[in-house]
Length: 373
Image (tube, rainbow, N blue to C red; front, side, top):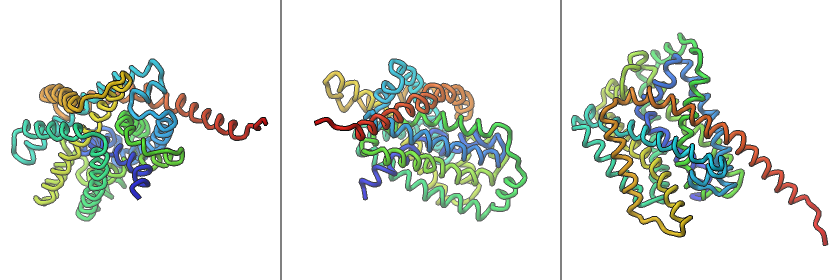
């Protein structure tokens, strides 16, 4: 049972765990990328994201399995050759940007929800991330997978509550909305940006041994990653259009529901979700560093993991103090989105797919070739 879970479900759940925290869990990304196309247009855009994620994840997982690439450096060396450095530059930029968002969101969460200085939130986040990356892959696999499952339960409860109380408002907003022009582009752009999180999944693809497993894990991973977002989107529609101006829409929704107990649970879960996104991104960086040590026939000291992670976190958090969450997402995400489409999505769906097909044909020819005695 565990083996089946590791092969088919874990990659998608780890991907969802990382994607959801950089803004998705706060609701800000959903508002920024989707709601601007209107209630119905935003929903169509999220379905476009689902399709793109499923297809690209399936091809990426199979390419990683075929080339045995379990960190992003190895993966992109096989895909882009010397051009792999382009992805690393983009990954560092994304890492800092997302950690900006996480740091700012954790600080805002502690200030707005718990009445504590924002520094407490960012400090606790940094300590938890440092602890998890110190202990490595096994603990991170279990933690991210379990947290993803818990989030399904939490988001399911939230959407049931919102639909029960505001079902008429949600239905009315959808019924009187025409899809805004550009929702397909918005859905693809959001998918492309978040596919930068694929390297965070590579470490757990060691469990995948067959093409069928890789492809199914990817096709399952796309819907698995966006489903909590779709559920949350219906909650957002209950407070449209006022919610567009909220820095952390999820906290705004919880406060409007008027349940202190559920608000506390959700805010703790939201904080944990932000933390696990940082864990996933920084663990991918550590796996890349560990592989570089192996190539030099050395073993990376364990303390390098938390020290490297905390160094980048500190840099990102200091920058986050100067810019708000809304501005970070509005300014930074759009530019990097199109760069990732060019450096990752386009190559994996052309070069990567071609190499997978060529490898399949080669294996078929080898199997059918006559043997000489």
